Amino acid sequence: MDEGLLLGLERRLAEAKGTQLLVLHQLGNHGPSYFRRYPPAFARFQPACQSDELRNCSREEIANAYDNALLYTDHLLARLIQRLQAKAAQVDTALVYVSDHGESLGESSLFLHGMPYAIAPAVQTQVPMVMWFSPGWQPARGLDADCLRKRASQPTAHDHLFHSLMGLLDVRSAAYAPEYDLTRACLRQPS
Ligand SMILES: [Zn+2]
Image (cartoon, rainbow, N blue to C red; front, side, top):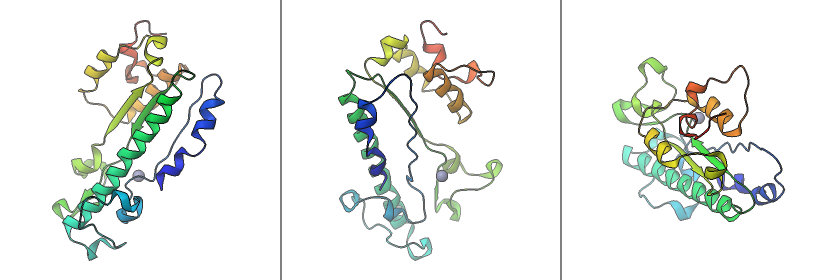
């Protein structure tokens, strides 16, 4: 289960020195076996597909299993933020969460993901993104949270991820393109 990603996190935070990037690569909602992605306590939406073969299930059962897996991702993010909050007096942290792709659950008889981008339906290409900052991060970096909230209503793409992480980590190289850094326009004194 994805919660295994949190193992050792407390120790890493306790021992953190300088600037660090920690990558937690979730299995997330990868199909077709959505029912294998969450523990029984998260099986809230029923009936949920319990087969590795989507053709054995109805669209409702597939969507329910997928939604249960989403609930578990919500839980994982909440647990992660709780851990970061618990260490907020010692470590300033920024959390960036983004999915790599969406998923078709039977709309237009399409399932899973991986259609060529040009013809892929929006459910495969439009994904959630979340940013969270510990209370100490914002004043330390001069980050204006209201400004960032406004930015969140505008379109963003995976193209922004690399440059935004460089911005958050205050790393600069010839590869850094400030116009793709999501937080830069919301810093009081951009470096
Ligand atoms: Zn993927």
